[in-house]
Length: 476
Image (cartoon, rainbow, N blue to C red; front, side, top):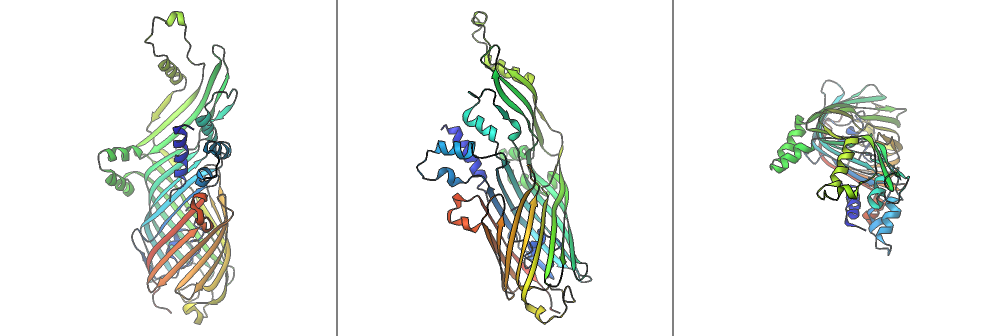
């Protein structure tokens, strides 16, 4: 196995092992202020809260649904070349993905209006997201080449990838509409730092019998890679000003965009509620430091044709360069700098929750029922329910289904357990822990816990943690 094959393989597996799109443990966890970020219409108890800068919300995930690092590098006596060929080159399909996301709250806070039951929230966070679908035909070409592949058509559309680094500034309004309904909306302003996408590629490469040579290679291509921001950061790195260039693009010095989140909570009765949210309905306009790489056209090349009697006296002729010039003439490779628009990856959540046991805290003595005069939502010691999650991806929607159980231990500690089925795992068990010591709130959540005994064999891992200062005000 040649070194370039190892580089190709390791780069993909490292890509999938970076430090969540689906925050099923956090969703509807009403004790935690950051749950507003996945449902701006959740029921809120807080008079105000303040997240510690850079510590109030950190979350990330990495996933690959088709293979794990241990599958290739396990000491099982099998030849690594055979495992790569069987499990990756031949085993994966174009719907198998390598993806990761990382989100860090820069600052966050919220407060309740003294004049109405409206809760305002605000903040900013940094978000990085990447996805690559397995480019199956490209992998076959990389490992086997196109020799001995007569009449095999390699699909150039197998390449689908996108990623971005974005700073998001947001302001939300959450209001109790009536005794049963709470609704919320959040406006978002995106400041793009980097972006790349190649999701609309088409074409093929095929070898057929030639007329002047044994093999004729036909390339039919309609491909485009769009990028923004990378050139500016590369120049800044060479000049030793990478940090300042990164901050500048994060503070409205790069690409700009607008978006919004919507959400609600509706009580079917005092103990049962349904919730829903739509996140990142928005777009980005990329205009700063943009590069578009285009390859479009059709050509059939039969290799280098040499007439020995005529060319013998011209020993300095560069036949390989002639071949390259011919290809570029038939299929021009162009670079342009025009602006482009991308749409955010919209996410949808929906859940149903049923509380049972006795209420906790001050509401035990409250006979106010659903959404009564007490600002604090009625919280039962136990909660059980289910959640549906969907996200728009380059190869279509991606769905996950979660069942959960929540248990409160007074007002000091709450534990939530989840079981999720998605494309990454059918045995995804997650746990969330929320601790409240006076005004200090700390939470930590982990996902796919059964795989932690051997991380290298895992297809998915995620985490969330944060630290806040919370005030509920005077109890009525």
